[in-house]
Length: 77
Picture 1 (spheres, rainbow, N blue to C red):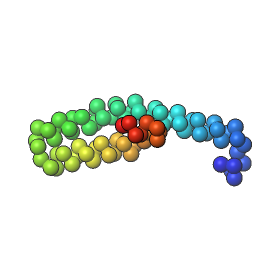
Picture 2: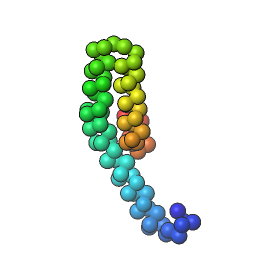
Picture 3: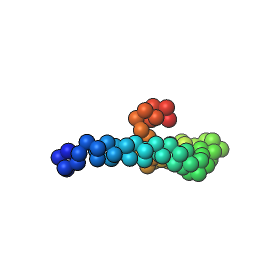
């Protein structure tokens, strides 16, 4: 970032903003699980097919990619 002409204060501001945005992803991720993946999980439990289970797993992976967590939180999720 220094090569872009940013001073230390600007760099810290950008990094703090990035951390804040990542921390907001926990709530967004939980909401997406409830709305998008939980119904697929229930369907997979009811149907019991490998395809329905894979559909649920794919949705969970999609949500995790969409809402990445900060490294300190990612270990707990």
